[in-house]
Length: 514
Image (cartoon, rainbow, N blue to C red; front, side, top):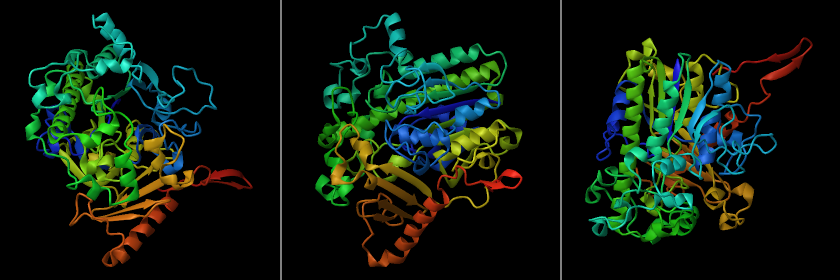
């Protein structure tokens, strides 16, 4: 069986037309969902990119792998999906990036461990590594006659003086590169070229798209595929002052947003002064970038079908985390709201027993840590004890695993939005910067190590505007959820050597029931 493992970056979970999104059009992903299974309640376990991808690649909760910031090394003692796949004879190859901060105690070359969080996952061969330098995409653009700016990010400066831009917004202006020359198209070009050279042995490709991550700029025609005036405005309180009264962290983050600006030539500090027109255009461009990714995935799947590889390929499409997109007066992904953690998941399982379940949607809570066990089960590898997640293949064949989780769980460190400066936010001690989240069908509990907790009731507050943590009517259920969170952490402490014990006959292993 072949493996095609596709990730997008910062893709909101509901943004698939297969899920009846009122605006986004994703016909190729819809077709994949119709030939597979779409998971409606799939959630990432951490933010930002590095910690989230560490969960995705190791099958571990952040509390166990502890790569909690972009730039926090991932302990080399942890195995990952690529290293395990090699045990079955695969040679996993990367097109894109993995954003893994490699353990400095390892002796690795500078290309794989560049001294930043943009390292290559151990076990992955490199097809095309697109990190912040954007090579080799820029090299191809140069060869195609493009004039490349000295600063790599200059490639995202859009065409200016476009008709109609003055009545829309900055992100309406298209990229200077054509759609067929975009970084999204480049990665698919490279992947197709690689697959065209395969000799029939099973392959494992990890295709990691940058879009729809900001800067929000799309090549033509995707920049104007969605009309700004048709886009909904962000879901938020009428004023920023009303919004940030909810919690000290929300106030701090909204007033101190850092990271990538929403488009070229902007800073994250501009997020709070965008006009309604600009906010609608940003969303239109964001959706356009999604449709571009969808189109390129369609091109790749078309190649698989043309060459006969499709019928023997397990395909997974997901994202590392979501995007606030102005909801609650926040952009990016450093909040406790569901928009930060809800991500898409489609699995197309080619096995005969899964063919009968094509087109199903799954309502159970699934998590990014389930992806590694799913891929390993598909290729016949025993799932390592380190994995906190569970395979999703039973869902793909129309079954529901027994004793499945009833909530999703997530974590993030408050320094993540602030890790470019030394000072910790809100005067917190480093060890008091962790946030844990548990969310079920109705209730959501958010526990801060050094700040007040939060509690939401989705029945009458689906957008999470009203904190019920001090409401006496919720006292008992809050206590229940605090206990659930504590039990979850206790049950998922790092197992490492706990399944081994010494006897007179040597070391014995107790296999955990999964």
